[in-house]
Every structure is written in C-alpha cells, then in structure tokens.
Image (tube, rainbow, N blue to C red; front, top):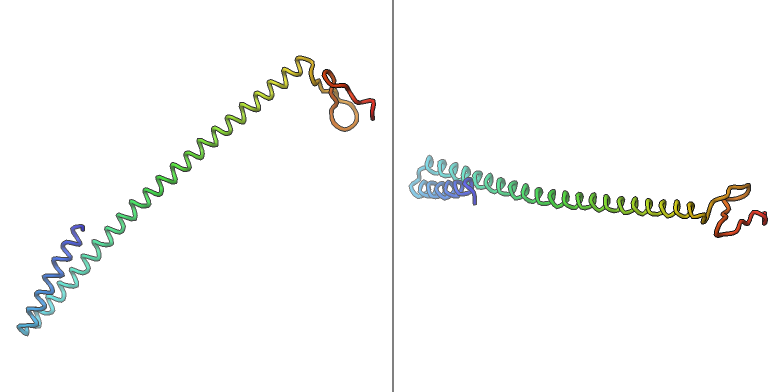
Length: 129
C-alpha cells in the first residue's frame, strides 16, 4: 500500500464518519462535507492503486525486455559461432582441395562436353564422348 492509498483510506473513513454524524444530527452541511471527503478518499485510493499497477507493469515490461534482450544476444552469439564454424570448414575444405591439386590428385581438365573431367588418380573419360 502506498501513500496515496493510505491517505485515501483515512479520508474515506473520516468522510464516512463525518457524513454519519451529519445524518444523526440533521446537519446537511456536515453530510455534504463528509460525502465530499469520502469521494476524495476513494479517488486517492484509486490513484494509489493505479500508481501501483503502473509500477508493477513497468517492472514486468523491464523483466520481459531483459529476457528478450538476453535471447536476442544469445541468438546473435550462436549465429556468430555458426558462421565462424562454417567459415573454418570452408577454409579447411579449400586447403584440402589445394593439397589435392598440389599432389596431382583430381587435377581438373577442361574440355568440350558437360562438366570438367579429372586426371591423376582418376582416368579421363573424354574418349567416351
């Protein structure tokens, strides 16, 4: 309970008491003042409740935003790692390809016809065209 709610409760109770005394004594002015104080108290309580709700909502939004930020940063990090792994794999494959080329394995021989033919460890099949 915040200050507005406490003050509102006090004004509401005091207003009820003043209004009741005015009814018992027939004092219309006291009844109206009591009613006014009651309305004021209820408004203060409502304002305090609204402030609490806003504060709670802000806390929840901050919590959800923090969770979303953490998920997003984790996803970015995972993506960076995946890209790094793929880059390393591509570099490894490229190195293996260069090594095979240097060793004389699978040297591409370009000739007319569909796709490259290979010489070295595999026989050229260009005579079959």
